[in-house]
Every structure is written in structure tokens, then in C-alpha cells.
Length: 490
Image (cartoon, rainbow, N blue to C red; front, top):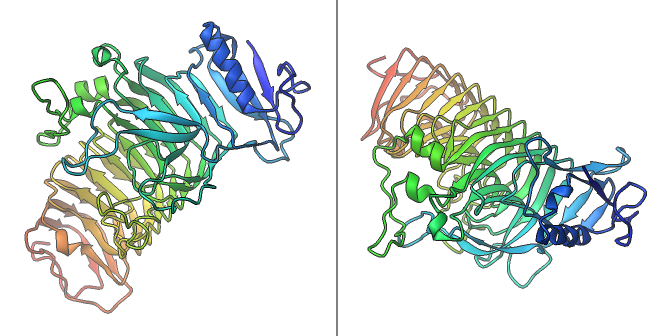
């Protein structure tokens, strides 16, 4: 077992790096050393990496292509005087690598998501299993002024990117106690490695290995981190080229993927999602503030657990005055799943998600989106510009929202565009002055809304249309306070 020490102010790359008294000075030297070990297949001799508190590694990045073992994971942590700041790594646009999903990854035929290009990443874990990272300060700021910050050609940036590609399942990655901030990436790109923390699975480099070495994640734990001022995402886990299998992507006669998908009735089989998606994903006790787009999202995961997280002021870039190069994907919410099976969101808080009144097509605290069996329970929301919860479209099925509290969210407490079966029960909705119980302009879905409290206490009692045109809603056993009428069936 070997531990290597690095100190920006107390080190020298001519040292042996084997003790706090003889640390190396740069991450560049550490990376070069690890690359040499990799070329001789002796990378397993590194078990621990320690960065001294108070260090600043500016213009440097750290890319890891090999991890540890189940018995002896590779750990990256701080050392030194705990009164000093965490060691700070700011790539400042360095650490550029080429991301390639090796297949289209969704969006529309005319507006596909970008799926390959250059990315700047401060800490890259590429096909690295059994890695634990703790107690670092990570950023990726911009000094290049040749492009505007919201130029569509701005490079994608990540604080931490976790990539699965050529070694099958990436197992056991822990990110804990990190401060990730000021990652100034691309305002628009949703599914490149672009944001604070992003875990992505590509198809393998060799197409013959797509089914033999399925790239996916198992045991990803992201906990007790602070993520601030990142664009586009705050924390995102699980987007994958294997959506082409999960979503029944179509191919042409030569076998090329066509970026056309069949979501069926929205349900996702356990066998399919556990074969091609991510498993044992836990995101807990994180604070995400002021991200450009969405705060926390799990995608293509089986039974992910998202709990005890706080989102504040998500979607700050999703506005008519910033998101100007295109209108495509001009949507963002706070904490939500995409195409997950039995995702559980509990004890989270979402505050002040922005810009539903300024171009953001979403803006909710919570969003059950094209998933199967999403549960939101015991969550609290307040001040979100687009409302409390959306059940997004006809492929979000078997969703439940219960025992949550919403305080002065805006627009609409409940949003059911084309949804087939939302079940909303035992919640408390304290409505802001501009908040309808059901967002009426897109209430063309189906919902059972029962045993909730709807309290209108910020305006005079008013007569509400409980069944907007096109809706199929049953109101049952609810309490209505501050209204002049009730639903006729309740």
C-alpha cells in the first residue's frame, strides 16, 4: 500500500512524494507518474493520494484511468492543518479530453443532443472502479473572453466527470465532503459532461463489445457535498448511450442508430434497466445552489435514492435574456428523475427554482419525467417559479406524490401535461397569490387528487375551475380553505 502526498506550497516534484515531509508539488507530476505506472501495468501500487490543505493547484487537472480494488479502493483526500482551507484544484479550462457516446443519445430528429466533443474536466474518473474522493475544493473557471459566457460554442466543463466506457460496469465510486463551485461550462448542453458532477456511460470504443462489455454504474454514492454556481447541471448521474436499448432505439439497414425511440406505454422492465442502466445509486445530504440548469437528476437508474438534499435557485441560466442561442431544451427543474424505475425522492428541499416567468418551460421543484414508479414523499418546497410538481407527459407512469409540503410555490401546485395516472395524496399545498391548485393551461392529463389540504391564504377567496378543459381529474376527500367553491364530486 502506497500513499503519495502533493503540496503546492511545500512540495517539490524532485521529491519522492512518499511522506508529508517530501511531497510533490504539482498534479501534473502525479498524473505523469500514474501514466507511467499504467504503461507498465503497475498502477495498483498507488492506493492513496493526499493533497495538503491550503494548496492551490491552478490551471491543473487530475485524470484517473484506473481505480482500486474492493478490498483496497483508491482514495483521494486532504491532509494537513484542518484550520487551513481544503486543497483547491481549478482546471481553468485545462484537462481537455474528447467525449464520445459512440451513438446518438436522444433529443428530436431535427435537434439531437450533442453526443461528442471536447470537454474540460478538473477531476476525471474514466473507467475507474473502487475510487473514493473526499475533502477537496474543485472548480473550473473561465479566463477566455473570446466567447461570451452564453455562446453556444463555449466548451463543456465539469468539476468531476465519472465515465464508464471500455471496462463494463464501473463499481463503487464515492464522492463525499467536496466543495464544487464555479464550473463555467456550456449554458445549453444537457448531456455532455457539463456541470458540477456528472456520471455518464458511453458505448465501448469497439462496437463489437457493446453487448459484451456493457458500460454502466453500480454503487455510486454522492453525499455531503456543496455544489455552487455550476452550469449546466448541478449533480447528474446515469445518462447513457444504452438508452438506445432501454428506449428501443431504431437502426437503419446498416445497423446505424437513428436517434428514434419507442417508449412503449412508459413502463420499464426490471431486467432491461438492471442490465443496461445504473444500480445502487444514492445521492444524499448535498446542497446545490445557483446552478445554470437542473440541480439534481438521476437518469436510467434502477431504484435510485435521492434524499436529504437541498436545491436553491436552480435554473438561473434558463431565461429569455441568457438562453438566447436556441430555444431547444429551454427547460429545467430542481430535483427529478428521467427514465428511472422506482426512483425514491424523500426529505429533500427545493427553493426558488427560477425563470418560469422568463422563458423556462419548467421551473418546478419536482418533476416525475418519463419514468416508471417515481415516488416523492416527505419533501418540502417553497418559492419555485414554475410550481410544485409536474408529472411530465404520457410516458411518466405509476407516479405518486404524497406527504409533501409546498409553501408559496407559483403558477400551479400540480402540473399534469398529458400524464395518464398521477396520484397525489396527503400533501399540504399553501398557495402563493399566483398559484392555482392545478395548473390549468396544460391540465390535459389524468390524476387522482385525494386527502390533501389546499390553503389559499394570500388573496381573497375566489371561484376556481377545478376541471380545466381537457383534464381528467378526480378530487376526493381534500380540504379547500380560502375558495368560494369545491369540486362538485368532492
